[in-house]
Amino acid sequence: MVGGMKPSDLPQPTFLSAPKVATLCGVTRNTVCCWIREGKLPSYRTVGGKNLIRPGDLAAFMDAHHMYVPPALTELAQADEVATPEGETPAERQTSAEPAILVVDDSKEARDLIGRTLRPMGLPILEAQTGYEALHLLLQHPEIALIVLDLIMPGQHGSRTFVEIRQQNQSLPVIVVTGLSAEQAAANFGEMRPELIITKPFQPDHLLQSAQAYLADIGI
Image (cartoon, rainbow, N blue to C red; front, side):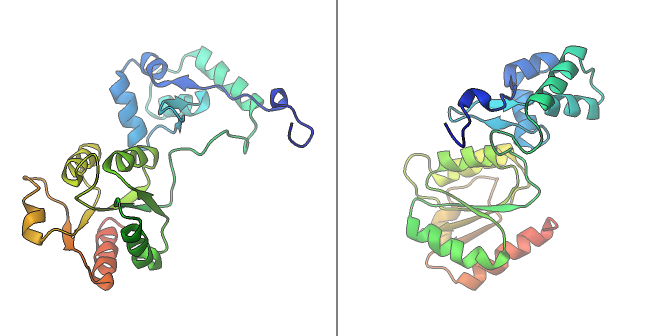
């Protein structure tokens, strides 16, 4: 009990699963996941990795895209608004207007150094220790506008992570910061290449100015 309230006293929001949303919209589940990844359809993510959508968010999305909104969905959205007044949402949405930087490196010391280097940019900095964690954060945070990526990491290699990043977002700038030589690092990539490869130890000003330039190119 918190502040005299029991769990049963708290507002209980309504959620729709991605498969249910796909059925209502007449599209595949993969299409719904793409909408979520691209930040078009606001969603919440459970600890187990499932995407859940509020009825009101779905109704607004369908209306904005000239899709038929079933009366039952409109009623469900209205009931959900009554049950959970504004400001009482259960989790942070996966959309945000403020751009962020994602630093991916298995070394905490390296992440800390890169974070300190990029801090003057004044943007939130997210961290991932592995490629898998980086891809998970990218799904959760479509506001990520720049990725600084290591290559040699446990689990999934950085070059494979880069390919999967490109599959999600073709235009997201990626700077590779690696202990490999420039030639060795470049050999890990095919036709798709990162915007820049920087070798460790790096000059902080070089990384900072490069990051600022790539974000300026996309209007940030």
